[in-house]
Amino acid sequence: MVYRRFQRPLTGMDIGSSSLKIVQVQKDKKGWRLLAARTFPFQKDTLKLSLKTQNINDPQAFLETLGHALSSFERKVHRVGLSVPNEITKITIRRYASLPKSREEAEKMIAWMAKKSLPFPAEKTKISHVALNDEVGTGRKLLVAIGSYDVIREYELNLRELKVEPEVIRPAGINQFNFYCDRIPRTGVMAFLGLFRGYFNLFVCARGSILFYHGVKRGFSDIHFFQDVDMTISLFRNENPGHKIERLYFASQVGFGKTLEQGLRTMGEMSIGRMREEELIALDVSAVDGIEDGGLSSYASAIGAAQSLA
Image (cartoon, rainbow, N blue to C red; front, side, top):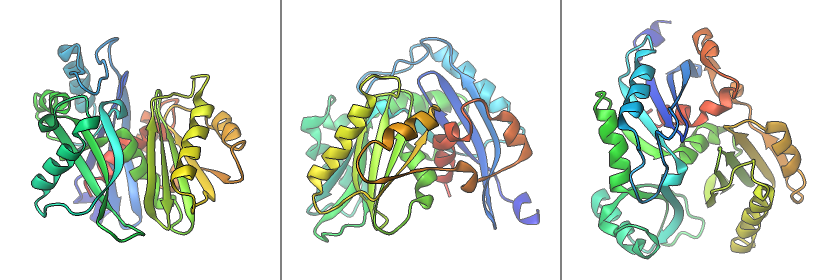
């Protein structure tokens, strides 16, 4: 208790198309603890998600929802990690022969080399990247998230109106993976499927290092959902003929866990594992009261955003 008393909570905010999820977490000697979790729906048409044009249709409604969310927490909001919708970023794995040592210059080079695939000018990009272990050992391999500076800046400026300055901004899918990745074995070839309302991500790791990533704008309610998952797994196999997925773990922020598991079990010889959030983070009594029907899994991106600050 003495240890926890002097640890300021970390706040994670997950902005989705229809709601805001916000959590506060703390790390103690036993691991991570969820102190509070809340969901706040946006008014209809508050946001219109887009990769290249500004998203916030109704700034007043957006700020009212965020202000109400922040005021609902007993503990003061200090450090904030932010999840932005998957749909407003482009995430890829890229290999570079070399990159400048300066992070700013490296990101300029990444933007310039990706300019042909971007729907906005290279000089208008905002980039986040993480170095990956490379089995080949030549050059540098990065997981890169690219977004429009104007789109992401719009979220930042609105948060600043409430005196909130996110220290880390990442796509929801990256933060979701961040929350679950410690439970993925560091041996063999393991996959992780993360599901959102209108989007899914597939990560494949070989001996603990990310080998493959692909995101698809397809939700579980779409008739072609399982077909697109199967095609994404086939894409991995075609690009990585020497690697066979041994086990696929999955997590959903929108429910449908049992049906999702049944569908995934029809896809090849790999085994299927469902992630158990209760094994990753302990819950305070006050946090349990705030968790709604979607369960703890619906807060995974918000928790991952907070954990990114540690």
